[in-house]
Image 1 (cartoon, one colour):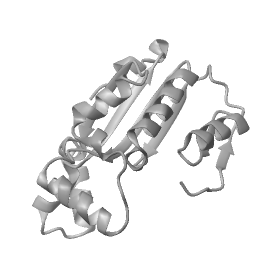
Image 2 (cartoon, rainbow, N blue to C red):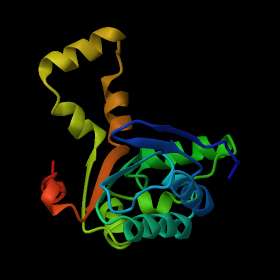
Image 3 (cartoon, helix red, strand yellow):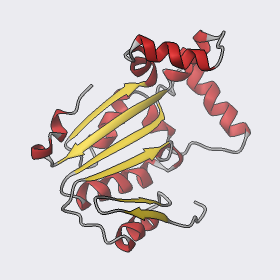
Length: 182
């Protein structure tokens, strides 16, 4: 992975940091930020794990689950990559020399949840983006759809069925983390 400068922000109530997603980048950022691993921690990944090998992403997920007493991990990335639309997505990315090393873990919502649970997280949930979109208030959908004319709703639906939001929790019963469901 390309080395990238770490960025962070600290306020009186929280600290945010960004870093490379490899083991060294995450661990180094946490050490540099002097994170208190007993405090509730939110970890967010957006289309990151799919570019790592399954072993690399498993190591990262295990490290996160084992490092923090109370944590939530939120992941946005591809799903349903085994169908024809998913295969076309993969082929298009390969033509651009962009290999999805961890695509095998993105077969289904169940495989996404299982990856989290098998790497030390206590609870896991996942939903595709079309389901989330369909649950938005109608006024919000109308507002979104008025921003840009979209004449290919079928294409949008296919694309949204191939991305998901997954989340996992560990500890934090007193914070209600286990009750976060969809």
